[in-house]
Length: 135
Image (cartoon, rainbow, N blue to C red; front, side, top):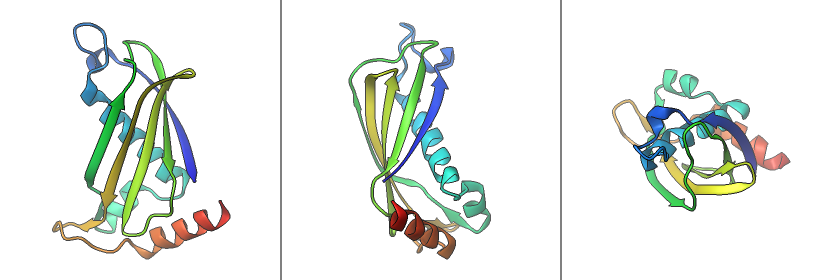
């Protein structure tokens, strides 16, 4: 399993009139966590895109326990639990300190610029094999 942590301070624009984080605001936070986890693994989204690959979300889910509030500092914990093959699934927790606020997941697949499903590039496959061999 690979894990990454990202700190986010809740911006006013991410809240509703009650000062509670709008449910749709969590998805960009998942993206932050996903991007940082992959970058820490040596896989940079920008480089994948330059090679002609895209990683669209094909499935997602969230479960809300407690709300985040304006100006809270939250931690997005992103986990890659299994070595991905053609698809990649990431799991997320959003916490305020030790308090669990939200859990979620996203699933992605590789496509080319035309939107056709493709196999991941060799550099990605090789890196995932290395990471999961040593973990």
